[in-house]
Amino acid sequence: MFEGEGATIQPQSHPTLDHIVDVLLRHPHVDIEIRAHSDDDPVTRNQAKELTQRQAESVLNYLVVHGVEPTRLLAHGYGPTMPRAANDSPAQRALNRRVDLHAPALDQDTRLCLLKPTPGTK
Image (cartoon, rainbow, N blue to C red; front, side):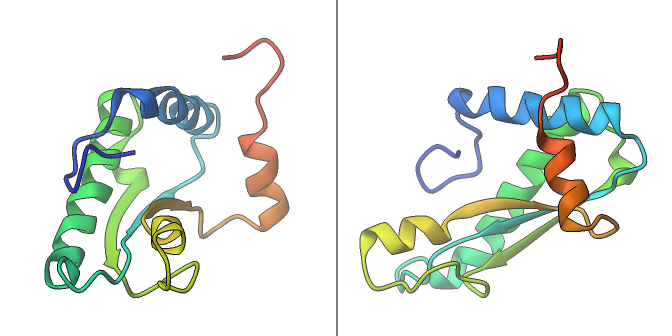
């Protein structure tokens, strides 16, 4: 999603983010926490929390620029504190470098329903 070890969003991520914008604009009652995560690479571990905070804020800024009200969004960089997989291989570390969107007020079924494209939309 990001260029190198930075917080600049890659252009190939724009369609995914545009879909998220569409969902959020169609559902103005949904608030989102943007959660950015990293692996536990010892070289970047000390900077991971700061980097993931900047990454989460980059996603938040993208959504706001494209019409989502900033009051509906919260950006949080978690660094390596919430791994999805063990950090034992490059593939596992790659799984831990991610951005998740969390809608605290919605249950799982509602979250899945919101992410399905509506017929006739992008």
